[in-house]
Image 1 (cartoon, helix red, strand yellow):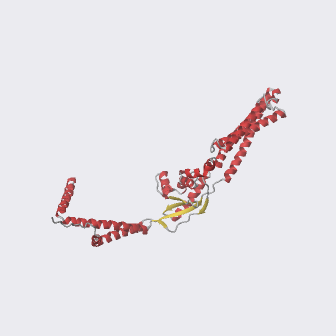
Image 2: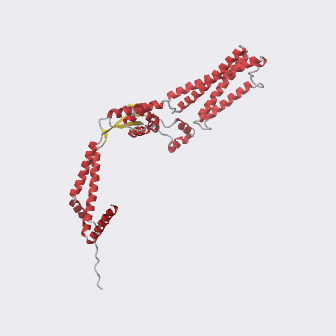
Image 3: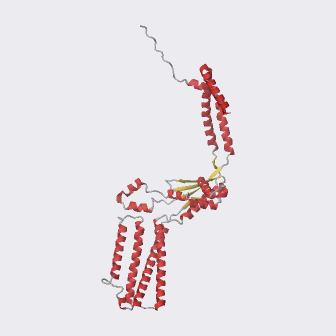
Amino acid sequence: MEEKPLIIEDDEINLLDYLIVLLKRKNIIIGITMGLAVITAIISLVMTPVYKAETKILTPQTSGSSMASQLLGQLGGAAAALGGASGLMKTSADLYIALIKSRPVLDRMVDRFHLMELYKAKSREDARQAISGALITQDDKKSGILSVGIMDKDPKMAADMANAFVEEFKGFTNGLAVTEAAQRRLFYEEQLKHAKLSLMKAEESLKNFQEKTGAVKIDSQAMLAIQGIATLRGQIAVKEVQVKVMKTYSTEQNPDLRKVESELNGLKSEVSKLESKGGGYDAITPTGRMPSLGVEYAREMRNLKISESIYDLMLKQYESAKLDEARDATVIQVIEKAIPPERRIKPKRTQMVLIAAVTGFFFSVFAAFFMEYIEKASKDAENRERFEEIKANIYFGKRRKS
């Protein structure tokens, strides 16, 4: 039986066919590419130029928040590894960026530059969104430099707004308690107000008592006892406030917290001995031999001395917290003030024209091959009938709609 030769069909794509199609439709390819590039160039020339002014500030090089640092410090040798794994050790740049973009700062900018009229905004929210969209912040993790930029059609306006953003940001942060020292200062400031109010009430109560009953003197032994109790009471009040403050950023296992709590318990025990009639130094023993008015006077005097002692101790703690806050204050240093830029940031004409040319080229190549396919398919009788049917359906579809 005679074997038939094996015929292998060559289905490989011939690149020359593609090249022929491109050369055949070169006018269309060149026309679309150049036309789209020219149109984009004209549009870029008509577009209003936008300028970007930038100011740079130096953020303090801290390894994280003070509370986070103290919490890590209590964990012992594994603190560094845990800090790196949990992401607690961060710079303050992220905090600054969030504060710069906060609503209070944006509202200050809206009022300062009358942005509702400038941007023709219908509401303050629209003005805030407009200025927020023009704001560009960049953080250089290596150098710690934070860039604050503003984009605007007017170069001078862009520079003024960039510098104003930093000024308004600094003014806003001055009233915030960011550090632990600032939080302690605010806490002691509030306690100092209460202590001052209590002292005024005690003074007024003693004054009223003296006006009603006349001045009553007590002996020196009772006065010393009263002063001793007052001093201890004041120390107890300060220790209690100190414990409350430490519990905001420390755990129960903190040795410093345990030490303060132990001192507080000791002071309470000492006061209990002095005030009890059974043991220790009885503060009311000398007054037991006094008339009833003397006892009342001793009590009024004791309340006054306690209030004075608490006020004095709170004042010392408040001044100490103020010094710590000043020492740990976050100083925002402006490295470069924004100046009116000479070059626009938008539109980037060269980039726009290149992108348009590349897009036009690929689109025209696709169009060339599609046109070649339509031309070849129309020469086939079967495909011609299909095209006629498609045209007929399109025509009748339009007639039905009309």
